[in-house]
Image (cartoon, rainbow, N blue to C red; front, side, top):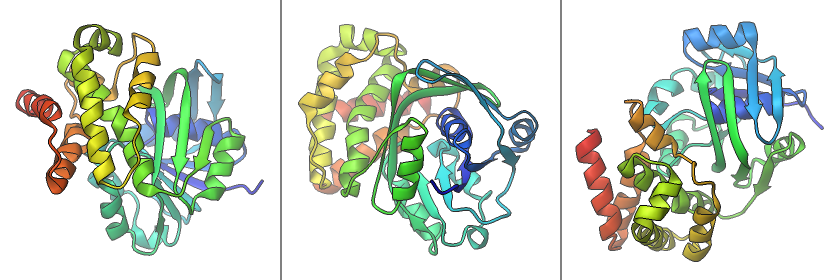
Length: 292
């Protein structure tokens, strides 16, 4: 297997998890982050505690800014800090690298194409429950870590598979992006509104959760995807009661949330296509008023 030069922009839960797994497979990994985090990672590496992979550590480089060419840039920041984070990656240094955003939402693709015209920007999604309690420390809950990539990232998909990730390449970019949003948006919106984990939402607001799943699926279909709302509902009901969304966690901790990248994106797409989403709209508007 070819060793890849990989930059991870934002070594939080998602980026840190993948950085550990890829570095342990012999790939050269650089984590791009703010000064304090970059310095800590450069000196101490990353430590992962995972229900699936166990206790792992990895040596990676930490840096504030990309200064050398790489083969792959993984963009794993929060949508709320994307613009600021991209300043760490000059377009002339990045050149023709493969850029794979593993962000929530769908609207970031256009921004990345504009910012990095010489690069190959390839859509990607990840389904995982991971967090970064402190710099350099990653927590991965449960067994789920599934990455889907659009064509153009086959080498990365192979590297991820070899590292133990459930990785696949699929041909339809719209389906790839919206399949995740069909699950993520209902879960994130309803858990954040309730300020409670998924089990509470299912027990107390199950009808609303099902309605939002149905509405987001209708928007996804209008966007050219082929959603399966029944399968999405089954998946949502298969997860542990204590599962929390990152949006709910951010709201609880008083941090900026990805409400616009997730719920706002659904409403904007619904408006473009004239799709009626009354339950989703009500939840998003309530959260906009509450979270600002």
